[in-house]
Each structure stands twice: as structure tokens, then as C-alpha cells.
Image (cartoon, rainbow, N blue to C red; front, top):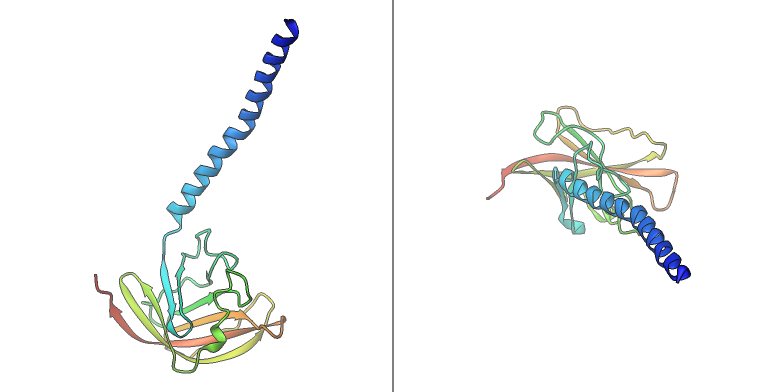
Length: 176
């Protein structure tokens, strides 16, 4: 009889100890998920019809603004600012986060849009050039022009990156 009570009490202690370890961890995970949803609102939306890309851009300080999670915004300029220089980066490999993998298919004159605060800003792709992959990017654009730069890795040379430059050509109010 003492052995049965010992086994039952011991089992209760072990079970309650396991619940104490697991339960707070599960609650914390749920709270983290809610924070991600609450803080990760769409800031801008990038669309490149030629390569069928339509993707959310998050604010620069959002935890989702990370090249390993999507398309990373690297500058604080917005498309409505005079002489704005918006720089976006994404992978070009074969993973599910390689949103710029087909960027090499765009041609001079192709249109790229950014939706921001109820307006659609249209850019026309003009040129691309190669830079060293060293954590720094020299963005070369025309003076007094609103520009959009898209940066991605060179698929053939791992020590290089491509910079695609487009210039804003129009602004349209979005229909509600």
C-alpha cells in the first residue's frame, strides 16, 4: 500500500514539474506570435509585373524587415519625398525567401510600383550595374530624381551583387 501511494505522489510531482516547465514556455510563444502580427503591418507594397512579384515591405525598424525574412528596406526615404532614394534588398537564390531570383529577367523600360499611403508610385527600370559584395553598396542615381534601387546577389559570382535602378515617372491615387 505504501508503494502505491509513493508511486502516485511521485507521479503527481513529476507531472506537475513537467507542466511547470512546458506551460510558461507555451504561453510565451503565443504572446510572441501576437506581437509579430500586431507590429508587422504593411508599410509599402512592391510590385514588378514582369516577374510576377507582389510583396509587402515593412518599416525599417520592424522585425520582419530582414533580408532573411523577405525584402529588406535599407533606407528611410519614402516615395513621396523630393529626390527620394529608396533601396530594397532580397536574395536571388532558390529558397522561398529569394524574392529577387527573377530580377535578371526585367528589361529596360519595365515598370515597377510601390504602393504607399494610398498612392501608387510608378517607376521605370533604366539600368543595372555590378558592385562588390562587402556589406556596403554604392547607389548611383541621377540628381534631382526620385529613384528606387533593388539589390540582389549575382548568381554566377558570389563576391558580387547587382544593383537595379529605376526612376519614378508617375503618382496615382489608389481607388478605394
